[in-house]
Length: 104
Image 1 (cartoon, rainbow, N blue to C red):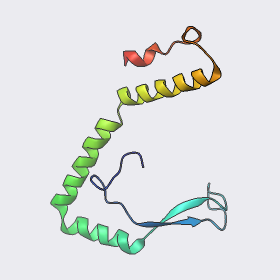
Image 2: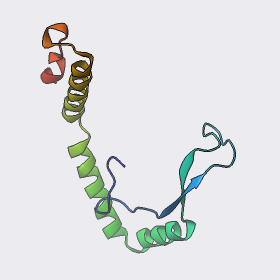
Image 3: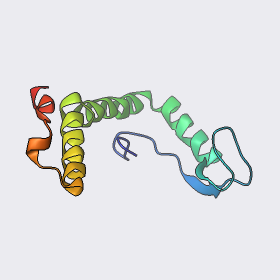
């Protein structure tokens, strides 16, 4: 997960299951997380009974996403990834210009 953790979300227990048949875009043999329905219901009940605390969890999630998923960080990560790809392909800095990310 890119942004959820135990401090900013209510993570549902799950069991990894291999699909025994095609299901929409998911093909037989793919693996997905089957949620624990009882645990899900427990978390929903907790939110209902602890609205103030649940709101705090949501506020932490909002703050964390804004800090970790922003345009500057994304452009830096893309630039680093492109630099790595260019390096593996043997290109030098004279073959490319990645300065646009620095202007964001």
